[in-house]
Image (cartoon, rainbow, N blue to C red; front, side, top):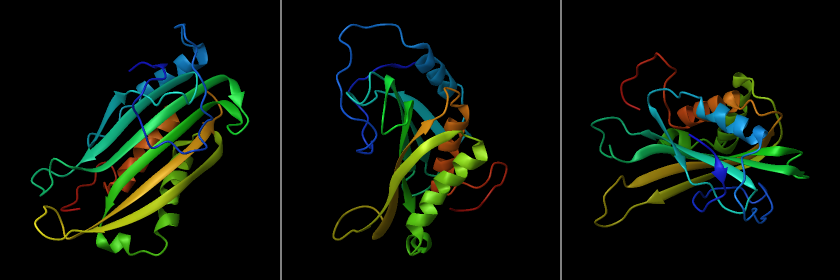
Length: 212
């Protein structure tokens, strides 16, 4: 996957990720720092249950942007087999002039959405639990960063009448951004994948479970 100038596409970016700004009109070679950061993200190989694709990044957030999406599909044979149980997006922003709010020239922005079972959805500490999924993933991966911030949102829905799907459903959404201390983003991408796996309820690698 390769990076590029900002183009329309991705959503789910925290409001404080970057101040809108115009990108240069003329195309120019990507800065070496940005190219190295994109290469590090692209080198990550997620576990088999996670599918990653490059997607158009959001526009006007920074002079240089790159974005990937990821999803965990429902188990084969499940009622909603074609519907992902968790989806995520990671956006890399680069402004050679830096941003005061970033405390650096690179910024990583993530958005994660996952289904929840009734038991986990009823946990009164769910927002804190969801945030710990991110902080623990970053810590375990050894990612070096600063200026971490974000939100965790829980939603519940009830279906009525002639509509497909479970009567009650629950979701968690996590939006966050942080500033990596260098362009070696492999550990950050690994943390992103680990966060998605946890949010999707995947077992540790090598462990088989029956039912989710």
